Length: 300
Ligand SMILES: Cc1cc2nc3c(=O)[nH]c(=O)nc-3n(C[C@H](O)[C@H](O)[C@H](O)COP(=O)(O)OP(=O)(O)OC[C@H]3O[C@@H](n4cnc5c(N)ncnc54)[C@H](O)[C@@H]3O)c2cc1C
Image 1 (tube, helix red, strand yellow):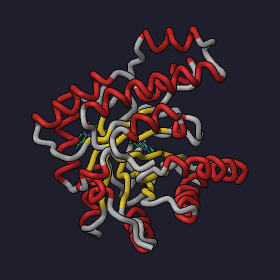
Image 2 (image 1 turned 90 degrees about the vertical axis):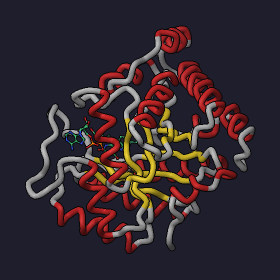
Image 3 (image 1 turned 30 degrees about the vertical axis):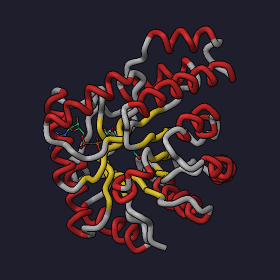
Image 4 (image 1 turned 180 degrees about the vertical axis):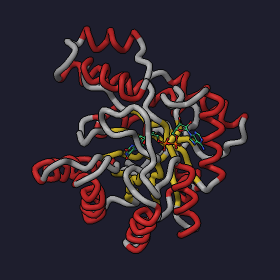
């Protein structure tokens, strides 16, 4: 089985905006069973593609490909594994890319990866790669037809020297062969619009898909702000607080916020909507979300 390339789906205006969901590989077999159940429910949303993140090491890495295979068997497609430079030599990455290609995957989310827990600074493995652009180059040299997605940061990557430098390095990833950009999560669309404008000014023409994480509690919101450096609008904090901070009502308030973001993004002709669903079905099945996707001819 050979997947379609996401860049080709993005090239077909009649399919836009694409809807995609991001899963993460669970730590144990029980988590895999739960993921299957969630994925089964999410089939009703008919996403155009799904992605599976890549862990910092150990068993979750192997599970990335296990989960990709499960999603494929369930009829999702294309399925896009993520791949990072973390703790891998160049030859490890070549070997992994050979397997990815041989198994018919034609899309890879191509990343540097975060420093391991407890470390603040990224260090390349001995004989490994330091930046995502190098991994894009490696993959494209080996398999020119692979479609590489790359990460973009509307609120600037936390380690970046400046917003300008960050966009310059994003351009390097795209020039190396990155076909499209998926953004880090954000809660204020103004950050995304500004980012897209800045990218275009710097000559980045690739489609830029907004990534959204419908927040489910105040606690999660605080964790996300620390982890990703995302700004959290006061109005959203207030909405979560009024809904009790956590539990079903808070989750509904978080989804409501994401739906409002999606409505506005669709008015601006975004190429797709990527949902960080955190292996939960609720946001991906939200009826209002479906309503706004339907308005844009998405066959649901
Ligand atoms: C859509 C998406 C999916 C993700 N999936 C995963 C995942 O599956 N697994 C995971 O571990 N993490 C994942 N991440 C997190 C990501 O790995 C981190 O944000 C990481 O810190 C940076 O990765 P990158 O690919 O953007 O790196 P890079 O593009 O290499 O950038 C990292 C930093 O280095 C700077 N930089 C880039 N090139 C150069 C250069 N040539 N010289 C000097 N500085 C440079 C950039 O400005 C930036 O500050 C994901 C992020 C996003 C947005």
